[in-house]
Amino acid sequence: MSLTRSIGLTVIWTGVLPLRGRRPATLLGAGQVENVANAVRLNRVAVAVVDSQLSPVQQRNLEKAWGCKVIDRTGLILEIFGARARTREGALQVELAHLEYQRTRLVRSWTHLERQRGGFGFLGGPGESQIEIDRRLIGDRIAKLRRELEEVRRTRGLHRGARRRVPYPVVALVGYTNAGKSTLFNALTGASVLAKDQLFATLDPTMRALKLPSGRTVILSDTVGFISDLPHELVAAFRATLEEVAEADIILHVRDVAHPDSAAQRADVLGVLDGMVKDGALDPAWQDRVIEVLNKSDLLAEEARVALEAKPGTVLVSALTGAGLGALKAAIDARLSAGLGVHRITLGPAEGAALAWLYAHGEVVDRRDAAEAIHLAVRLSDEDRARFENRRAQAAKEAGGLVSKA
Image (cartoon, rainbow, N blue to C red):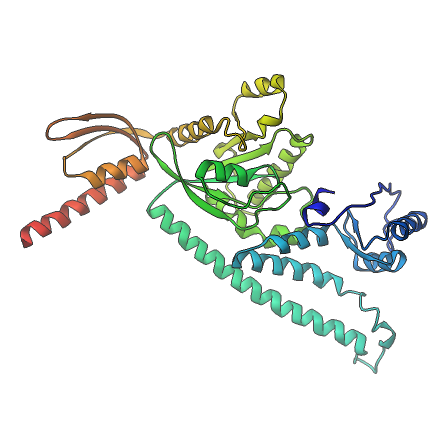
């Protein structure tokens, strides 16, 4: 029902219908179809949502039996995605997923033309021609969308390359839909990303800079929410929104710890990420980069909150009240610092730009200011140390050129 309400539909009747077997024509048994038809008529239902995947024939037959529009789980999720996408990339992904879904609906779904089938020899009748024309048009559009999405992915790859040259570590938020990722994103960065109590409020990846307690700057990335039994069409179409996860230095797995199905939602998210490993989109060691963030702690009883605070490898927060955000930033800092070496660096009084760079890209663990020099102990990766020395040498060269020219 959460999916249905998230797109603005009012649920006026629900039913749990046990299946002894999936009927090819209607999915449900004849008696169940009739019972639902009575409920539809009695409650004047305009749209019936079936929480399962329907074949085109099943969908058509149920619409005829119930006298209303029928959509399945996949169609409902596609409608939600279509209502949420804002950026060009999101719109392209939604349209691609819609077309992949609609292409399967063409098979035996042209009831108004089926009586006209026939023809002579190898020439099909008008009904068959219409299906083939629509299938070809959809195929052409899908090919065009894939080319455009590939261009979007190439552009995003260039942007990631530019960030690596800056560089700032990337911290990606992942989690089940409605776990509070966007609220947490806003609380950490002061941004105003849409954050509502509804499923799939975020579809388009959003990034903001975040300053950590050490002074180090990271890029925080908000991503699309996960859901159980995500339709295959969407897994493929929305791969680009998860590419930031593959490139991230740290993955924050945000969980709604107050939700009764929190453990199952965690398993669903981990299952999708493991699927990305099998597809070669994510390295097998991704779990080493994960910090589990237990959100919505303000909804827990005191005893449960105390027990979870003692759980190793997790951070308990409330994005709504701000509780635990300091501890989360410290955990990100600690994870980034793990394995980094402490480098001793001496700067001249005029090297203000170099000093600012070290504060932005490393962790200054000790500083001593003398009359003619600044002595620092900075925690940096070997790559950042080499990058710093190159920048410093280039700055010295440019300064020397200006002096000699003068």
